[in-house]
Length: 357
Image 1 (cartoon, rainbow, N blue to C red):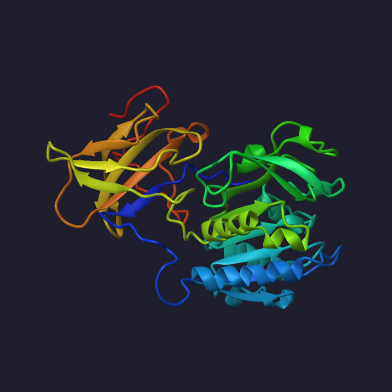
Image 2: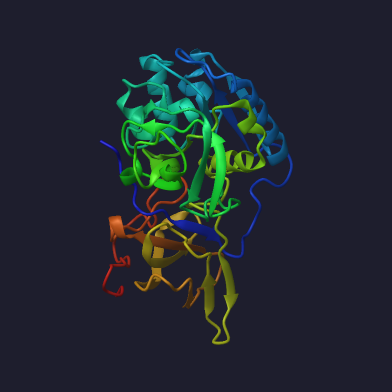
């Protein structure tokens, strides 16, 4: 059964705003895995080269492998993200699958490109990781189609026009992942031939799953795709999100804290802090001591993206918790999948129709 994560928490230290890919050496490492036991895409080389270039330009190191023996708990612990680049068929044995499950459960990230959904059909957990058992079913001929951005705030889609034309091999999936994931891009089936999933046909999506992060795009069939600037930024945003390098939460979020004329602390954050969220709560606590959190403000209006709160002295940790309609009453998870605050005692829980106490 898929583990449904509560609405994600967007947390930042007081007055801290930083570019996660700026600075000295690599901030994290990724492993590109491109083993195939079925159809082999000729674009694997171009995809690997692109990811290596993205790593050099954006502060992360890249290793590549087609050797499933590299899937051990010890080796995978070296990486923040494992990218399944056009894998096909049965590529891992049982012990290697266990190691990869452990990697995700320990907070690792998964990035799946194109035929990552044409992989491991008999591994139930993998189908949930990819999203809603959305394994590949079939595809029509390569052709142009119109894609629509569903989430314009995600780092993998924020650069895209609301609707745009792209040429690729467009997958139909065995199951629609939409109920289980956050859809980022859909394809308009009226703009090409061979689509069979109807309105809202998903092409790219992400989710928090089993303690880690999962991001997938169905784009990436041909070598030319990897030289397209929009796709390059799409893939980069997915990698950074899966690595947790865009800031905690679902989108790159900047929280600003300033003094209001009244002397209170004014907490503001980006709109659409959580897809589908209508309510939120703000907590304050000591850094590293989650049990110290206390509620400062709550709202059920959904439209206000700032609050006035009374701060305390010293270095404090401020937490904005969006409350998603589907998991009403949750606090939220931080970027490591941990519930914040740690204790429910006395915590403020937003509700759909009532203000918090």
